[in-house]
Amino acid sequence: MSKLDFLNNEIQALKEQGLFINIRTIESAVGAWIQVDGKRVLNLCTNNYLGFANHPKLKEAAKKAIDEYGVGPAAVRSIAGTQTLHRQLERKLAAFKGVEDTISVQSGLLANQAVIPTITTADDVIFSDELNHASIIDGTRLSKAKVVRYKHNDVADLEAKIKSEPAARNRLIITDGVFSMDGDVAPMKEIVEVAEKYNALTMADDAHGEGVLGRAGRGIADHFGLHGRVDIEIGTLSKAFGVVGGYIAGKKAIVDFLRQRARPFLFSSAVTPADIAACIAAVDILAESGELVEKLWANTKYFKDKMKALGFDLGQSVTPITPVMIGDTEKARALSQKLFENNVFAMAIGFPTVPKGKERLRIMISATHSTEDLDFAVKAFEKVGKEVEVI
Ligand SMILES: *Cc1c(COP(=O)(O)O)cnc(C)c1O
Image 1: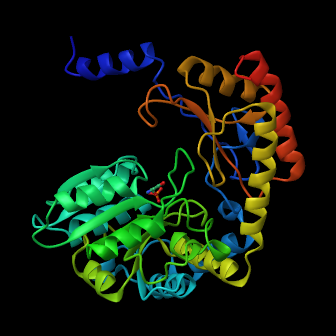
Image 2 (image 1 turned 180 degrees about the horizontal axis):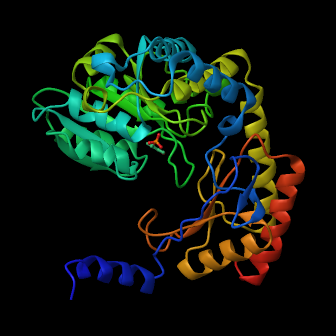
């Protein structure tokens, strides 16, 4: 008997149910091809949409920043951790997105924790899409507001819930911009229209939309022409931007208040100069040209068309996130394993990340993939899909 048996039993149960995650170690920089377990494999798993994770301009900016500013700020942002670079990034992001201001924090997850509990009180009601990302759910749990979940992307249900839930102060509607497991997009225009009708605040967590949707990756508000009408946009610097960090973009009053009260900003140290400088270089590249974003979308169309023609079910995706729906834990794992044997790296995703019965492989298309790379992937899927009997 050990004090930790309760955990050992849980781990054993995960293994028995086939839910224990085998975490692969990547032995190289992140690109179209990576090294895993000593093997060179085509990378279909990372959020490196634009190839920024190993981009020469970002690496150069990071190295230069280390020489000029050192490796760490050694303080939280509000005490002594705001360096010139931090403000420069925030201003550049604001100009790029066409918003009044932005505030950057250590991650997208923390951006949700920075904003949701900080701008809500017990007198508010939060309306949250039932498929919102875990970090939104955590943010709402830290809030004293009442949380009402509405049906996924269902604006009629949202409106019905708003009507039946009076708030003493504010109503706040929160949705993912792009839903990370299915690749579908929130009906942001309709959500904003309902919000305006009831004077509610709107917030889109656009972690998978920044650098992907809109002109040159300016995000979901730009994609739908909703400038100034989405009150809060959350972005991450760790997906398309290729580095690490998160930010909140919106009206000056919101950002000003977060600088005074957001706990990740006040109580956790600032992101390093190298990271920030790399992010600035990424914004500069996108501000100059939409070429990489166009390549990403062309690759997405190419890959999806070929996979559909083979008979694969790609779910509801309208973005580079490409779920290959399998609906069975064992089959999804077998498919992933056999793809790996054929030098294709595509992880199976199961419960609790997606509901039971919705097991899948999630393919992430990148601008770094060449046409030959995508053909290589499709060929492997065809071979292995037949072996596992999913096509
Ligand atoms: C990935 C993701 C996050 C977390 O971003 P990090 O920068 O990795 O912490 C937050 N929200 C959504 C919707 C995401 O997909």
